Length: 150
Image (cartoon, rainbow, N blue to C red):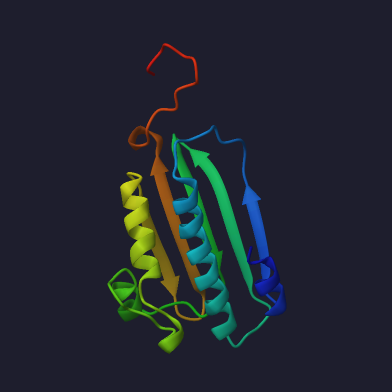
């Protein structure tokens, strides 16, 4: 979805899916919305970075029954003041082109899935967003025609 946008800005966009991940009862559209928001923000952060030739890596893996999604960029990064505000209502660094609702909604969706979102960022070094979805908080998947509720 964002490959062309990244390429047009000379940003390398890589997907890394490590190992196999069993099916999970996730709201696909909502998780897609979260990842699309994080990738779009990463592209904007890389565009704002004056060094050029930036990279964004999207990683998906499962470790200790927790599904991990990571969006890592080497863009402009954020200082502590910005990091404190990114999940608040109507906060944006995009001027009139941003609503200030994207990361707030992303956090809300992740919390509704029983997960959490973490942020690491340093100015001029980039940003990492980690979505952690513990399987114990997700609904169990029941096979059609199965009498076993688990």
